[in-house]
Image 1: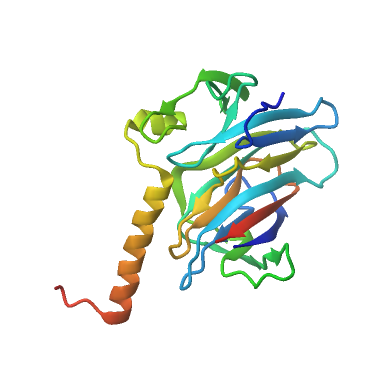
Image 2: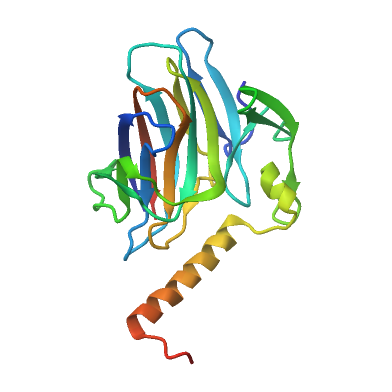
Length: 110
Length: 149
């Protein structure tokens, strides 16, 4: 079942000739942008995590960052601090710009 | 902003990437994956696959893939595509955008959440690569749509 009422969900669909079509909604982690599968009808409150060792999907309570007001993946939730991906990219791009300037103009240590 | 399509195809490997897209090394721009399909065109068989999209910071060594403009009016892209890697991109540990288990008979379609599209920063050779860490040695294909900013 696909959740309705928000156009922000992504979709994950498996087409298997021997099975009914499998579709789940996706939200993006606000901190790392990982696509998170959702249990249908839970409004991003319960995540579906694939357990590779058991080769099975498992329902797990979700996580939400009240600083950036975004769902977050369990790995980012475990870190415990808020750093939205946009901020991380800005920091990376600023560092790259400085590196480019140093490569072009040189760096005498001042 | 312009949108491009990338096709990656190889005999699946449990260690080497299927496809990568990375920012240009000297004129990097941001790029977003917003749609992808994965599957195998090999004869039907029951083999497990685990497809993963992961961040990377180098392009590795691969056969170049020319991203095709979805709108022919757009300019050629700056970012670089590659498939059939012989040396993997430098993957960022644990930076998986998604992992999806598939049977070889299955096809998978991924549509990114709106405003949550995995985005690479405008820094040299940052981007994404696709791995099949669980796979059988059969032909597999991925088509990815990328929005370069």
